[in-house]
Image 1 (cartoon, rainbow, N blue to C red):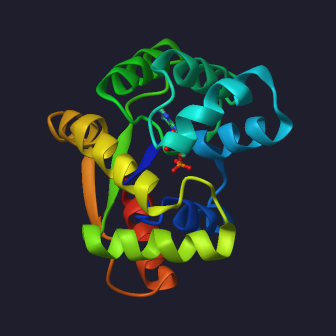
Image 2: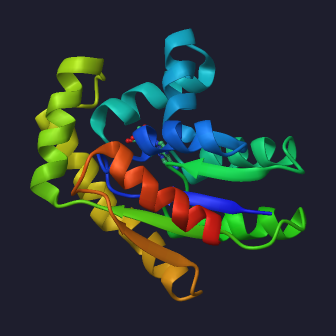
Length: 189
Ligand code: AMP
């Protein structure tokens, strides 16, 4: 079974590419950010807890996120997995290993979409105009980059050390052109 982590800095195109991939492959898909945004909209307990953290550009606690992922994986036992926005810390990556092992699902592979930081900032500011996400303003974006560098970049190293890491150019070309490379990579896994 495939357990794919679509990885990259904020604005790298994970959401856009996930949508294209899901038209071509039958993945059980989870975006932790999307779930949190929907919980905020519904003003659930979790949503209320997450709202302030997300609006500051910080990370929601590993405990909450891992619980979310665990129940998702357990409820999709026989499907290929596409994880978007998770894991974001080394602790989440280790927890994922444990969940996959307990479900006899094999290992995870990271596919990172690499994009220059200046380009990321421009993309996110443009997305702010279109989607109106509260965390897409310059101050919050800077904090999200800082969190990415401090906590999330280490996740790539963690999978590199396991030989379970592939890097793709997520910057040059249209989303469709990038998706062609991405789909080929997924087919070859
Ligand atoms: P995203 O839609 O993936 O950019 O996520 C938006 C926000 O949700 C992030 O800036 C975090 O505050 C929170 N979030 C999403 N996924 C995670 C995760 N795996 N760990 C911690 N926080 C997360």
